[in-house]
Image 1 (cartoon, rainbow, N blue to C red):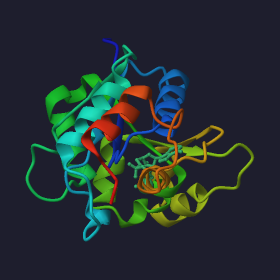
Image 2 (cartoon, helix red, strand yellow):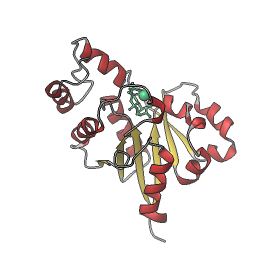
Image 3 (cartoon, rainbow, N blue to C red):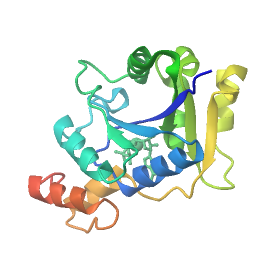
Image 4 (cartoon, protein in one colour):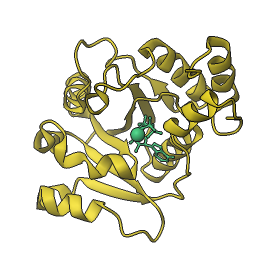
Length: 204
Ligand code: ATP
Ligand code: MG
């Protein structure tokens, strides 16, 4: 019997990527013994239609810089290369197609994202194709139980939770800080901080 590879997928807008994302991805990688985590910036997030999102190239470059020093972290441009909205089901189907049965996929989400899971496209197929790992604050009664109740018994075996002290950091707050000229030091990696300043992102 060959060994199955375990690969993490971390989808997000990453506008910009921050320390909360990185700490979470590393915690899940270690807990689930993942050989790598693939960060996938969304080109066109379906739930952010009508919102102004920074051009994908900037978000991609920042994600590469932020993850570069971790030998287990990789970035994929696959959603940026696909036209139309970025649906996770299309991404996971593509990855499963590439790896066949040789890999198990673990999709990493924050607590807010997993609460929304019942609204995702083809969620039933998605649960057949990959595991979900949702971060919850330690001791917190989470929305995950509600989601599992809504999605049925099959989902209980596919949706996992990991206790992490979720950092009170969001990209929304970072964008707001930059706009107001406040510091984002230590909330994003230094390279991302420099890139935001150099490119003049989030100033208006
Ligand atoms: P925004 O404020 O623009 O929505 P965000 O900080 O939520 O940005 P996203 O790119 O939307 O970042 O999130 C990608 C994934 O990372 C989602 O699954 C989200 O739940 C998760 N996430 C976001 N912030 C954190 C955090 N501080 N700790 C753990 N997970 C997080
Ligand atoms: Mg978000």
